[in-house]
Structures are given as C-alpha cells and as structure tokens.
Image (cartoon, rainbow, N blue to C red; front, side, top):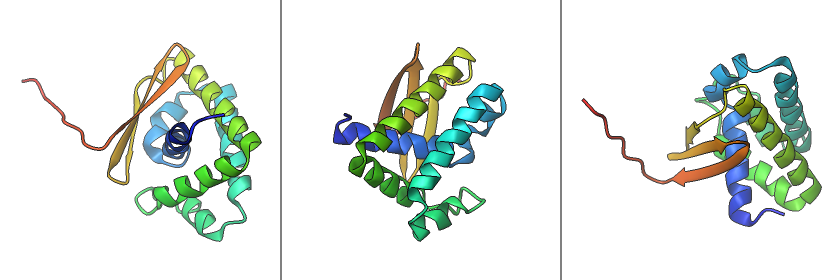
Length: 142
C-alpha cells in the first residue's frame, strides 16, 4: 500500500488530471481505448464520492476556476485511505492511463497548479514520479 505522502500526491495528481481542463489537449489526442479508461476512472471516483453533496457540487461545476479542487482532493484521499481496494483500483487505472499516454507520446512532464502549489508529474517509460513544489522559479533565456 502507498505511504501517506504518496497517497496525497496520487490524489492530487488524479484530481489535477481528471477534474480540470489542464489535460484537455492530452485527452483530445488520446486514443479511444485510453479515453475509455479516463472515463472509467472518472466514473469510479464519482461513484465513490456521490454520497458527499459538497464534493459532487464541486465536481459538477463547469468552470475549473470555480471548482474547489482541494475539497475534491481531500475527500478523494479520505476515501482512498479508508478503502485500500478502492485506492489500489484508482492507482492502477491511473498508472495504466499514464503509461498509455506515454506510449502515445502525450503524457510526459504534465504540471498541475492549484491551491498555490504546483505538482509536476514526470513519466519515464511508464514510471510515474510526482514532485510537489511549494515555490517555483522560472528562468528565461533571452
């Protein structure tokens, strides 16, 4: 089973990927088989969280700017902590999607930013590495 920090990072990455428009370009270029997996992951998560009206209200918001992604992450992570089988199912499917995207050339170095934090997911031959940066410095070359 995942350690608590890994579980938090996984939940954060999933929320950033599945419930924001940040990955729209990636999703638009995904194969039909990968799109079905993304839909399945979304459905599994929504079904698990459906008893929580607050989370469902956030998930149903059309505009990402209006969504409280931290609330979604908090409750997703809570469900993953309570139900190890659910956590494993979600983790496995998410990693499978990322491996598919990597094979399709669409999934490398994806960064999600919300709640004042940036989460970068780097993939190297199917291995997913997540980084959480509290502060970021961008250096531009002229």
